[in-house]
Length: 322
Image 1 (cartoon, helix red, strand yellow):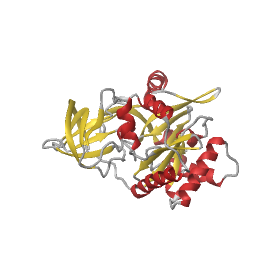
Image 2 (image 1 turned 120 degrees about the vertical axis):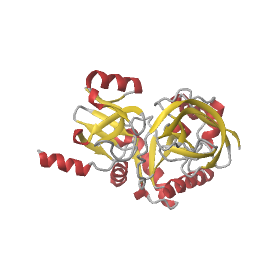
Image 3 (image 1 turned 180 degrees about the vertical axis):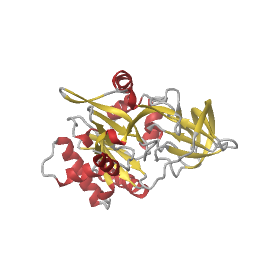
């Protein structure tokens, strides 16, 4: 048994955001941070196994279920200074990896409607020079519970691969192989986000990111994972809420997780976003308004965090001057 547990640790030693991990109790968590913290993968409960199959759970449902039945999976991260979920390596019975799942689907001869659209999308990206070995698929498709109306969540491993995929997406839209989101798509996307931007503000910011499009009537998203990233070990403490306007000085890590925007400010080094809504939200040189939580490290480094809670109510980043 000890030998088996040691083998598990070896198999599950590397975790990336967008991976899923499954436990023996019939719980599937989405990994939210690369690596481990205290021997645990930082994550959030997404699916629960029921007599009728896997059921997706919302944030409040997930927290309530763990509080009532599995409190050991509730976790406070001193590094993130946040409450989330975490699973010890020896509790993981299956590690669902986006790269492996996409390769499996691309090699399969049988696909449902969602998988056919994914297959066609990957074919197009491959024809325009994308290295599909550096891509994967997450979300419901990762664990095979997609429905007819499911979106496609594509994962790009590496900064160059991700930005190349954005460029190809733009080209394929211009050529008519892909389509922009329509008004209903944008409205549904906005309603899912529940963000503190107006609908028009949300759509304006999202359109220029080129990380969403439609294939055969099905929406897909592009997600960036930096597999060379070394997780930051700096501990930050919350200092209170803050709203200010500042200019972005460096957007290199705008699509990272967490997204980072360095700013031209005398006391504060950067804006960091843990919510996908504000990934890629601003470009270098743009003036933004940000509302979030001011944090400071033991070394005195200050940053503004947007997404201090999963829903990030009252927290936002928006461009006020290009």
